[in-house]
Length: 304
Image (tube, rainbow, N blue to C red):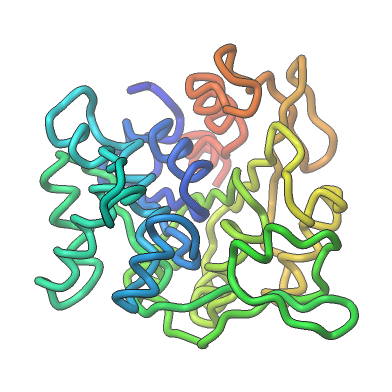
C-alpha cells in the first residue's frame, strides 16, 4: 500500500465504532501516525457494560476492538489483549483487554494516556482517541415522546427514533477536535449508524470542529442491512440525520458496494465485499477505492 494516493495526505481521520472503524483503521494502517481514529464511547453491553456499571468509566469495548484490529498478529501482546475469560467465576465473559484498559485508566491521569500505553505495548502507530474521556450514554426519542436509554436498547428499537442525544452531556476530547480541524480526509463508517457513527457527532465541540474543517468527508456505507431501527432508512435519510444533528451538510462523497466500478453523482460504487464474509469489506479493495475517490494533490497543485 506504499503507493496508495492516501499517502499524499498528512492527516486522515476516521470516526465510528468498534468493528467497522477497526476494519477501516486496519485497512489504512500503512499510513502509520498520519492516521487517527476517533472512537465512540457509548457502548453499555457485555464486559464493557459491566465495567461501566462497577467503575463509572468510559466504554472501552470499541476502543479495545480497534486496538485489537490494529495490533500486529500473532504476538503474545495481541493474544493477551483479545483473551476472554469463561467458566463460573466473576471474570466469566470479561475481556482481558477491557480489564487492562480499566486498570491503566485508574493508574493514569486520563483515559487517553491508558490508550497510548496500550498502543506502545502493542506497537501501534495509528492514533486512537475516545470521543470523550467522560462516561455518557446514548438516548433515543421515539415518535410518541418516550426516551430509550442506552446503546443496547437503542439497537433493539423497532421504529427509527426521531432524535438522539447523550446523557449526561459531556465534553469532547480536545485531541479529537484538533485532529478533525487539521484533517485532510475524514471517513465516517462503516458500522452501526445510530450507535457507532452518530454518537461522536452529537458532541457540540466535535460538530463545531467538523464545521471548521476543510477536509473531504467520505461516508462508507454498510455492505448488509443493519439489524437495528436504521434498517428502515435509506442512504438519503442517513445523510439527513447527519445534517439534522450537525446543522450543516458535511458528507461530500459516499462509498458503496457495487459489482462493477461506477459513479452516480456523489456516490461511488466499487466491488468491496470480502470473499471470506459478506458483511466485511475487503481491505485491499477498500483502500484502492478510497484512493481513487480522493483528489490527487499533485493534480490540484498543477491546476492552481
